[in-house]
Image (tube, rainbow, N blue to C red; front, top):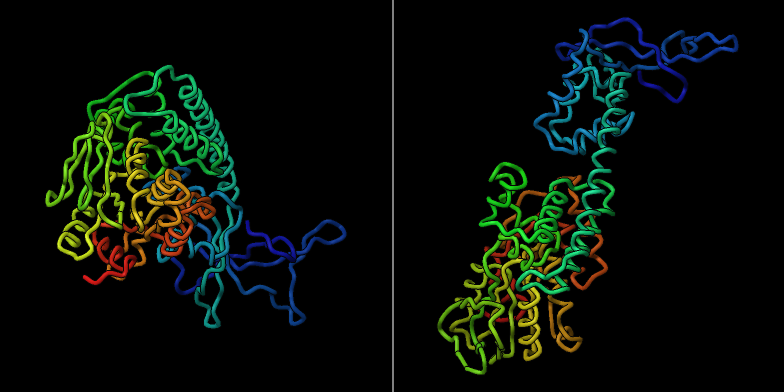
Amino acid sequence: MVTTPSGQPHHGPAVYLAGTPAGLTAHFVQRTRRQDDGTLRTVRTRNNRLRDNHVDLLPSTAPDPAALDHVLFARRPGDHSFVLGASKRTWPAVRARFGNEAWPLAVELVRAGTIVLRCEVTDDLSLGSPTGWALTAAGRAQAQAHREVRDEQTAQHVRALQQARDAIADLRRLPNSAVEEDLRQLDEALARELERPTPARRRIALLTALANDLHQGTRHTSTRAFSLAHTRNSKTWDDAAQVLREAGVPTALAEAVGLRGRSRIGIGGLVTAMPAGRSCHLDGLGIVLIPATTDDLHLRLRSDTLVVVENLQAADAVYEMFDTNPQPLGIVYHAGMPSHDIRRHIAELAEQAKTVVIAPDADLGGVRIATAIWNSLTPQARRRTTICDVGLTLTHTPQKPWEPDSPVWKDLQTLLAGPAAELAAGCLHRGYPVEQEGCITEAVLTLLGTDD
């Protein structure tokens, strides 16, 4: 039952109002005030009229206790928490959450017996605009049960994360191509999940599975084999590499458990590869992939400008754009979160450049990648380096916005104090990720001030 500042409401008899949804009845709200003798008295005006011109919508028939789960089954995970997370919600808050689906959802929740929906009454006795909802007694019981389940799940997540951190700390031998810094970054990713007020269940499951596989020395044949082993479904974690990238996990660790192939660095333009002292000019060959762990590999830049690109197709586009340009570039492609070896090669090339552009995707993973690369550079190289925000280009393609309750928002906010702050701020302002493939050339041309 809905409460009001002047006292507890009392529902009068059902009243017919045009526009009342099927399966619901409208009851005028009669405000009451407790008298000195403990009885309740209806509050009226001097003209003996009721003081409220609102109605509460109630179900016409006894609701089904399982109806709430049915109503919310296909919705976002956070919607369940929104509905049950507060005893009252104003209509602006409901509308902000559900948009055009707010009214039909509210009607279904009334039919389910979870909420009472308060609406205005128009002068011609029609149902007016909603003003908010409140949980019923049944809704409050559902909320309590929801909190208990959520608290138990949170405790399970905390235990799993701590066990994963312990497993990493007890790792007796580093995986191939990994270094202590990679493990430190994984531990930081696990620690961030412990600090998160609302658990990101999918990310926690992937991070803990990765940590446990590393501890046990398990290597899978593919991403789908990894998913099958942990979820009994080969397609559940098809996006594992992307989720781990956003979490800031180095590719070397994903490679160690079979989620990626061997770590390779892509080189293009005016860069000379020098394995074991031998010089290999890569001019005219496009983007050449070289194992990042090649023994005694050094790279020499023969240009004033180095562009560091996250994705292979984007690197190809930059190469083709500048291949015949009077100001040719050196180009590095690093495939997601770069491993320690790849960052070492990037730092070596950056030390030789007069201008360095770090150009990842404009999303949470891109901000983490830019931060990791920046931190691998010397102070001198950082002064010559710019982090590119491809989302500033006019030709970028807006993608699906992040959900309001996505952990991406808070993670980006925590990165506003880092070296990629402007990129993080741009992501927060747009509210959606931007992949670089469609706009990388425009972004690089704009930063370098070069005509096509």
